[in-house]
Image (cartoon, rainbow, N blue to C red; front, top):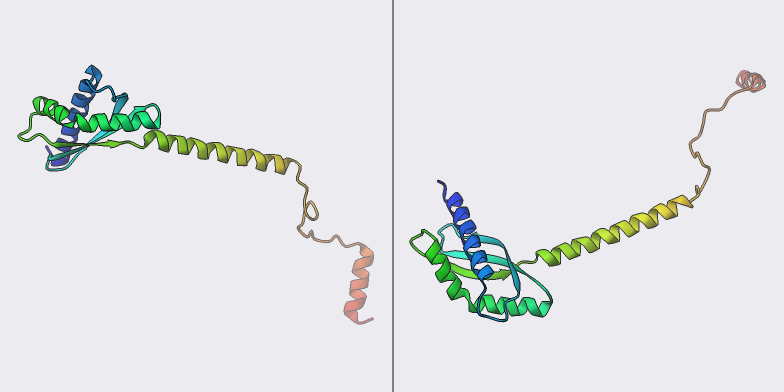
Length: 156
C-alpha cells in the first residue's frame, strides 16, 4: 500500500471518528451544528487538519470554533482509541470556507444572468448603425454601361 493511500485511509477514519463523537455531543454549550467536511493528514501521519462548517450566524461559527479548540484533547484521545497507528496525530480544526465560496459563486452567477438579460433586452431594440448589410455587392452592368466602358477603353 502506498503512503498516500494510507494517509487517505487514516484521514477518512479520523473524519468518521470525530463526526461520530460530535453526533454524541460535547458538554460544551458553545458547540453549534458542526459538520466535518474534510480531513487531511500529513504523509508521516503526525498531523491532521480537520475542516469543518457550522450552520448558523458568524457568532455561532466563532463559538463553535472555540468549542472545538477546547475539545481538541478529548477528540484526539477518541481518535487514538479508534485508530490503529503507533502515534495519534495532532488535530487542528480549520473553518472551511465552502458556504462563503458557494454564496460568492451564487452571487456572481446571479450578476452574470442579470447582465445577460440586460444584453438580450438591449439587442431586442437595437438597430444597425449603418446599412443593414454593410458588405459591398458586385454591380450588375447594363448593356449601356458596357458600351460606355468600351468607348472609354478605346479612347473615344
